[in-house]
Length: 136
Image 1 (cartoon, rainbow, N blue to C red):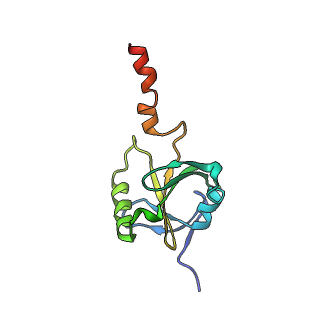
Image 2: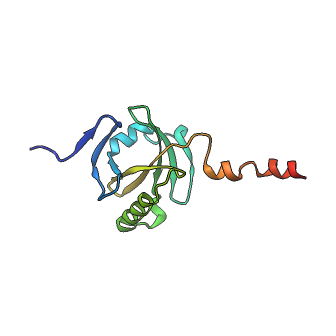
Image 3: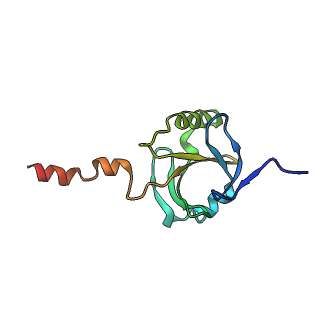
């Protein structure tokens, strides 16, 4: 019996299919584990309201950021799916691109392009003290 799973070797992840009309892809849990070195502390970029964020590298060399949904967030499958749809509709060239998602048991993850040189809020507000002292 053949599996319905498709392998997308060009992008470096096992693709379990597309979500509706969007360009989001389902990443396999083993590919996310491999990309983040089993969610190692060395790859942890930070902690947000969603949960921890890890840097990863796909087998193709493409860098990604993986947001793991905190188990205490109270977000269920329906809320997660709605968030995916909303974020995918908000794709814009000036926003970090959402590549896809991974669901493994009760664990849910969002897979984004990795933005080097810290976060956007750091870029926008990180040098506020330097700017303030320069203006005085």
